[in-house]
Length: 217
Image (cartoon, rainbow, N blue to C red; front, side):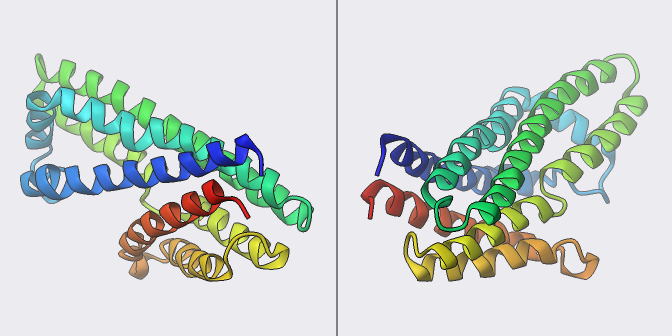
């Protein structure tokens, strides 16, 4: 057990915290306001952004940028822990982990820059701002969770490598397989609602993984 593995464990628990914050903010504030619903008037969403700009900036930084940084540390720590027994599988899994980290961080940057642009346009052209918000929402949703193929592949491959290597508890890797496959299933249009299963399941998986890495063997 190295200090780097413990950093990975702390990062995993940090990822769980960002997910909890994300779900809480959405359930208590964004969901109640109808933010993100494509059936609502886009200009209403822009006005919501204007009224809650600081909240949205912080939310995007937390659930995207901070999460992506923690994911990078967690992914590299797991690679270092399990590469001995499953080197090739861990190389592929880690590549997807780093790819997911990059995409998620980019999503947060796009979301915050886009928020500033949309709210600025609204001052002179509310209709154009509504159209810009729709374009922004498609990009952010596509990168940040409209489907979970990259994250699903990372968790699935890690779980297979974990079962093969014998590192960390076997039930943890079985749970990871279930969660990872639910993420992959979101690529099928009728099964997109499984994204909630993927997200909520990851909270448990991150906490369990974090504790396991912190405790060592």
